[in-house]
Image (cartoon, rainbow, N blue to C red):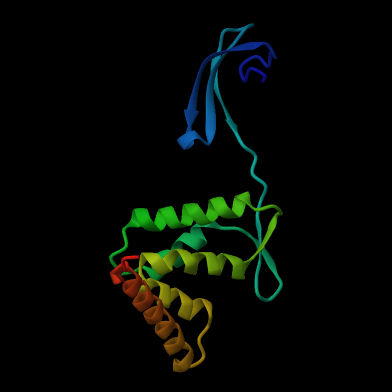
Length: 165
């Protein structure tokens, strides 16, 4: 690391701390030649993730776009902003863990739906109606009926008593 003041390559680290929630390391350095102190940051270089859209075109992954779409689905619902952030963080982390630099938009959509379903059923249906581009009310009804069936099975499983052996 060269000194920004005198361009000398000799310096020493005076202080090291985690930064950006553990995603970066902040280092205070002191130049061995001129004594100037400066700060450097070390971050993991993340590879850019390309999203392959339905029409075959590609665009760079945009966390803000994902966040906005989930916020729209959850509008006026009892879903805390922290829950939305956590869902988007989880999806982003899962995408970065996957091998490769390309992901299909359908994969992201399915991940959002899987995260919204236990969070809020109405938000799930809202997102699904846009994501799956329902053409008629029958498709919409199918999704709602599947949700109701799942909820009923879960309720029955919770209420079922164990029989003595």
